[in-house]
Image (tube, rainbow, N blue to C red; front, side, top):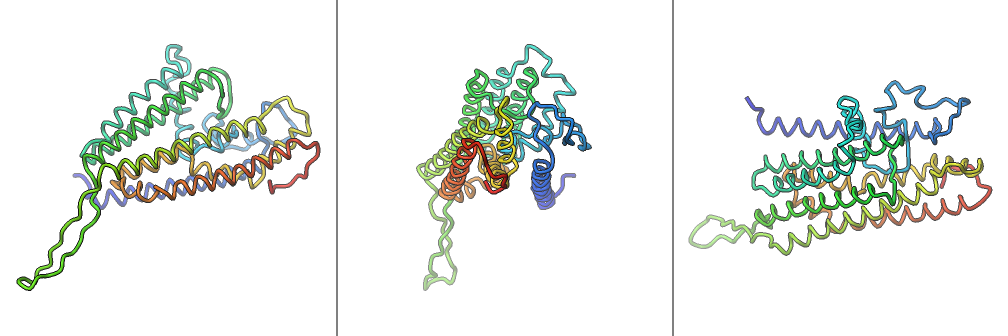
Length: 347
């Protein structure tokens, strides 16, 4: 016998709260890991205690072992859930060893998964829309898988963006096509099922004491398009800024074969509270997390409410985070340009 809808809702709410608490717990441990243990930069240092020596979980599935710029800028779901799960799946099925399965082929395949997801999300049935949400999360899992396979074959540890490579552009194009499919599916659903603008109460007449309630008109397709275009613009802005800052921080903080004084500056900046705060903000507002929020709205049948609430607020939040990050990037550039620096945690 299927549980009542109210019981299912309570279970889903409990799962959601548990996941949020897990993310906060992992953030706290990530901060402690960065502060107390050296960042692995491919340099063997037997004089210090490394995080892998104290971690009870193997570093092949522990996301806190290989801390990189891109890793700390990733959204919580990809970093703490999908990345370890991808490694586990690869350990079981040896996907990275199957030569005919290439990272680019995985990228292309998850576009078709996104299209199938969009088809389900455009449905009038809530059950099909929820299936579409699950399928799009499978697409996100595959997006993590293609990067994992590429890094394993190149013996690269941790999350990194290999900017300028063919795989980087193929992955970017496939991600864009998947997001486009999702937006189209969302538009088709809202166009076929336009939300109502509430109701109005008519005054009672002298002939009857009954109060008439008349629903207002449906939301027009133009208003649906406007809200979806605003959200799409936010996705584009978030994606462009996020990828820009990954490139900038990687160039400033992850250069190898640098003089000892520059290496010390890199580590001091990486351990600073300001840098951790900036990266945490991007974990919340980056394009992946925005898509997770949209999918959550679809799953909970609150899509229109989500789009209305974020229509203008989303731009304000994004511009605020971009401004804070620009200030930090400017300070980091100044610090890296000087031969001497103050070992402070305020930058």
